Amino acid sequence: MILYDENNPAPNPRRVRIFLAEKGVTIPTVRVKLAKREHKAPEHRARNSLGQVPTLELDDGTTLSESVSICRYLESLHPAPPLFGTTPLEAAQIDMMIRRIEFQMMTPVGMFWRHAHPLTAPLLTQFTDFGESNRPLYAGACKWLDREIGNHDFIAGDAYTMADIIALTTIDFATFTGLEMPTECTTLRAWHERVSGRESAGA
Image (cartoon, rainbow, N blue to C red):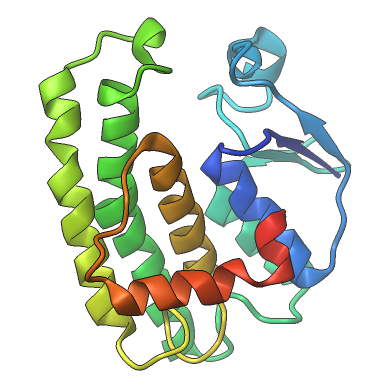
């Protein structure tokens, strides 16, 4: 089994590395350098037709892409500690929060990164006004998540799950791009400090 990976700040490969660290599982990795466009090379597209990372190659040559799908597969192999819930309700709640965070938070972060950041300017035609229009959308999503956490320790309740991994990597990548959490999001900030203190966050 090989994980085709990329270093930080790439958020999606980091999701898998954090997941593996929480499980205490080690998988050999091969770095695919995004800055050198190695993810678009024919040999990598043969593994992932969209030319993205991460991609997990199994021992029989089968490949899996999409970070959450990879982690679901790894969860089936290494169920402890559970990161996708232990009951049907918990699994559904975690899945709900994963999808909401990806749509409500990661989408504006991605659009800002593509259309308003200087590092991506050579790679595509940027529509800077559109990119900047995602600043308030991200801020609004942070305020939403701040309310959702409420009195819980973690995103989907009282246990650390894949939803926390998705949120942490999204927020950290947003900070890299220049998008900050609103200062009034005190619950979200406390959560972020708490999960950033876990050993796995350094993955």
